[in-house]
Image 1 (cartoon, rainbow, N blue to C red):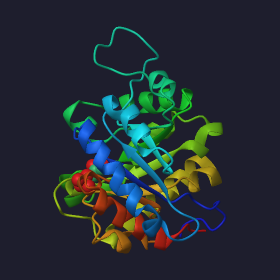
Image 2: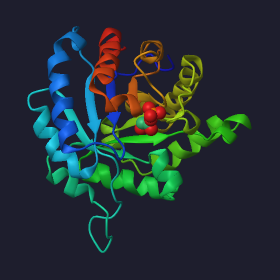
Image 3: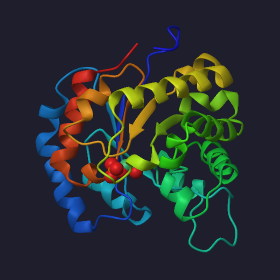
Length: 267
Ligand code: 13P
């Protein structure tokens, strides 16, 4: 572990539903979670569990989860407070729903919707200003990894985003390392590859943000499944997962939560 004096880090299992889901699916998903919850969680302290549905399902999912200790979040947020931005959603609107989290800079937003590092930094700033807890996503492409530029690319993404973070708000920041080549491909980073990048990310956070930065949870995302979760979660600098496909099926997501519960929190 790169920083022995860092505070205990929150362990988080998050599900990103992307553009999937329906009202019917939410009903049966929540029933399955409720039925399997105590068996999955088992130990103390439990991991924090988050779900990121589409905007239009945020309230429905939160109502369906009821008393379950699962928080919901948005998948993106606009950098501006308000204005003529058809189709966009402001951070304050998400907060207005009583929702506390948002993803920022997911690789699909970066590659499909042209979100540059500077745009992502603006979104991060807006999310923090609206008192949302952002999960800042970073990760390199296959070409960048093959050319030996993976760490440099991730450091650059982090540096640009972090420059937008007020020192007093660092405690709310969560980072997710999602190598683009591992997202939706079935090709997970090995625990060793993921651990090496997480260590690098923690070093950058510590260098730029001090001990509070070193204490930010750093999640791994990219083809996390119920089969590989335990090995990933056992790595010293991996503080949980950001799960795509496997989070769409409640029984699989429960197994990933169970793997995190067995791992517990790390000093
Ligand atoms: P998969 O788990 O489907 O690879 O998706 C990862 C992801 O993009 C989560 O945000």
